[in-house]
Length: 264
Ligand SMILES: C[S@@+](CC[C@H](N)C(=O)[O-])C[C@H]1O[C@@H](n2cnc3c(N)ncnc32)[C@H](O)[C@@H]1O
Image (cartoon, rainbow, N blue to C red; front, side, top):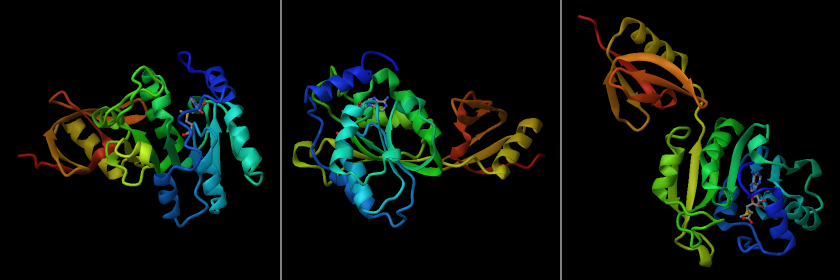
């Protein structure tokens, strides 16, 4: 991992008891979200879990496939002591960025703001990689952080929108209404769904138009339309992109319909 925010750094913070981010309980927006889920068999990953109150909450609420991950066991051992029934094989000491797995839900709680800003794109790419198609990243992000030197590192709603746009074009960031008092007004609820591969019909329609150099109208997920000639489909950073003659690129996962114009 990059920079000095490595396992030793975090381990020393826990050993010294220097953990001002730790609210001592599961975050309310996250417990409210979990309470609303019916399927208790969903595979849930909580990376950068720290003392892992959210993992404990989910486990006690009957979720059977909850995984708590952190770089350092110094944090996670607290979970094992508090909650001996938490499955030991669901406690993952390791680096999110090298983790292999496939999850229905990934829960964010003060991990993104703990990473070097240079790692943010890698974080989003990793979320995309670890989510099943249709899976969702949810959780809490800070939109103002007092210590811009970090960690925590500051980010704004606009920063998050830009950061998530490529992998999660429909990501939503909404003000949390149930934050704990010291964080009221400073937390955003993120919901970012990993879309499945674009349907064959959409791929085929774009490819046929590219071969014929035919103008098409692409109807996008947000209802907007783009009319141009597709030149190519490329794969970059885990996403399929259609390259248009007007010089722009569109993520194929955003395309809901391809309207082919009639040739004269
Ligand atoms: C600010 S703390 C938040 C802990 C917990 N989510 C909470 O709110 O109390 C950030 C946590 O992320 C962990 N962490 C940092 N980088 C990580 C990585 N690459 N993979 C897994 N965990 C990481 C740290 O060890 C630390 O426990």
